[in-house]
Image 1 (cartoon, rainbow, N blue to C red):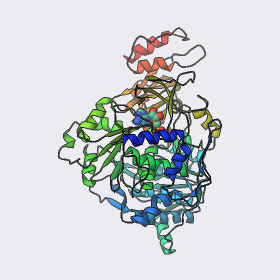
Image 2: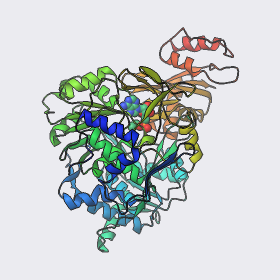
Image 3: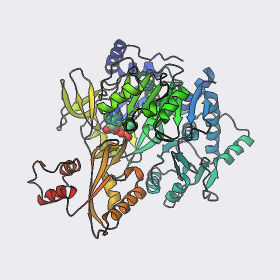
Length: 637
Ligand code: PRX
């Protein structure tokens, strides 16, 4: 398969970009003709950002899995679709060809149907990184059910919140998941979540760790048994449900600046076209290349660039169950050598953590198959960029610094491998179809270069979120009301004289910890649930490996003699309420918080203190009690 939409030179990029802005409908229609449709669209694009309302390829009928599976099975049934590397390098890896994957998705789709799942139903998937996770995702899409994958690091409480918000009546999970030396008891976490979710009708449990699990009669079933039933019934192929272009494909929860995570909704056609298009062009994917994205499918990166984008493009995608540092810090390099990986896509936090082990773990590994490197999730510092370039890419591999978000569905600003140049720590140029603008605090577009401001996007691209599940008004307020007529990303950015973008980080109260998005309000709510906590304020601080760490200032009544014990207790509460990923790195007990007379916490000052500043707090005259600042700053020493 070659791609008629593949960009092969800088000139072609310039031309494609220009056309995508001048004639977006014609541009995307041309790209979309490369996919398999049951019926083509009546209108390519219909939109207004006021409601917001965005419809791509309206009137078209399709099923994304026919594009990810059937058409490749027809052309290249034996091409590897998924290569799976287990947590334990001693265990056998698995290779699923397109035909194998097709068969497994069809069988799983029958299992879902036999268990009552219908088109439009929400299915929560809480699994480790095993092929059955990708299969479950595709099986939902096959029958038109809406999947909502939850990352394995979230707690029972977080799962319950999401299940209730999505009204998901079906769950697919595993007994447990292997990650490094850990054995995470997924089903047991689900059991705890379900105490608060009596509406859940069925839990399908896949075996992985064979850790003992409780199986509730009438609710819980083993996947293996269900697959046997499907086999006995002689059910093989499962015809794909004919979906409307704008039918929801999945919900993925993400954190914002307010307390409760939002269910970002992506729809079928635009998401498919955009993830395949961006995958092929940003990574300069060539047929036969092995693509290794190290993300977890529980995040958007895994959805778009482990599952849908690569498979829609007929690529070979590598799924890794484990962690980069187990059994030792050479694991990624072992995998690259073992499978002759051509494209490696990872997060700056992983690079920084591996840098810490020095060059020894690289010794003896052949990385010569690598052609393209990528990063995602947070700004990459120059030191990490240089290390990645010199030691992994050996100075020969372009590094694509891809900026995007859960809400954008696919990469929006990035250099394109072998097409447009990379600049350390700069995401560089927008992809065709993407019109970024910088605005000042009044919402006025800053024209001319260089410039710095808040990053917005002027017009829709095919994979833009359509709504936040069950609450369209929240979607409007969060993304389309700060700067009317534009999508507001929540990020700040700079633009250089040549029009390249550098993302400087979130301008709202969202933290980026190891590339994971966490809302400060969410962490505060969790801390405040702990007995004895009177009030708390959470800010980010620079962290060598995580990018940002979580710093919590807490007013506590009745501190234990050993403050550390209370700290540990609070961490336990945060773990229970959100999950271990939201545990603060630092907790400082204080007697007051810097507040304005109207009661607003001045986070600016707390951020400075968390960063290590002990004076120069700027104007503190509006504070109710300026003395509290000194006390906190001194307390930190
Ligand atoms: O702040 C930006 C940062 O990650 C945020 C989006 O997080 P999430 O929805 O979890 O998606 C992460 C994976 C796409 C953005 O608002 N971010 C993402 N990529 C970059 C980045 N910051 C700088 N450079 C990037 N390449």
